[in-house]
Picture 1: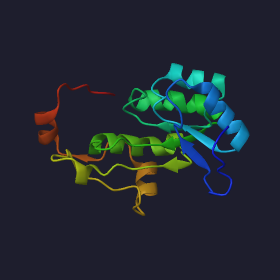
Picture 2 (picture 1 turned 45 degrees about the horizontal axis):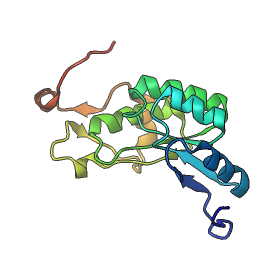
Picture 3 (picture 1 turned 180 degrees about the vertical axis):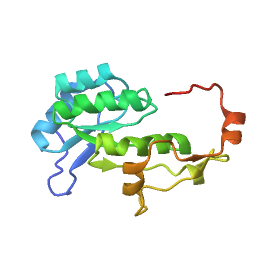
Length: 169
């Protein structure tokens, strides 16, 4: 039924079918012994529950912007761990430094097996984060463990570009 991937060395396939095609994704995992990564199909806690129920993904690609921010990602992460789902902390192309640093803040809590990174300093015309340390830096592990905030932020630039402001305790 599927293209033979055994000789390719492929171990992961991201979102190989249209959203909601759980039967095909489950069969691919079962028949080809590959890890199927849910990406577009994972936008909420209810999506996560359905993917687990249908056994149609064994890797969840976490993107904070899709999962309700830090709190949503941590809640889905807890569910994923309970069911043995591998976590990939992902990034959307063009994410702001704030969102990248929020993801970095989740590193210690989610302990993802896989990580991808967006390069906001390269992709955005105005980045409110003044000290962005990419994931490939040797400092990232120390920062993710010690950090309690979202990095060094240019408050005035953020204030000029923000649509609204919410202060969290």
